[in-house]
Image 1 (tube, rainbow, N blue to C red):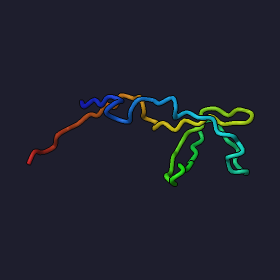
Image 2: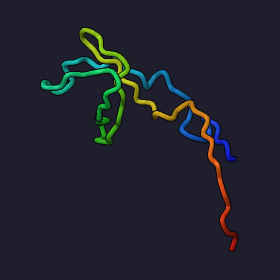
Image 3: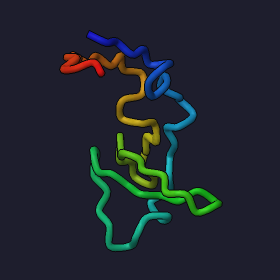
Length: 83
């Protein structure tokens, strides 16, 4: 088994990547729900996916951390052949 620590994998959870976004910044026909994925863009046009963690009256709380951030990754590996 190969174990990859969070620091070597997707990194630790960054609390700065959990932000409140005004609902007015969302598409007018969108009904935000917890667990829904949003696709935002950085100022330089790079796609930035996030998951809604909470819906409040005026804002949505969105987590832009990778879903596997903070997780220890474990892989079962079988070497089939060595050349």
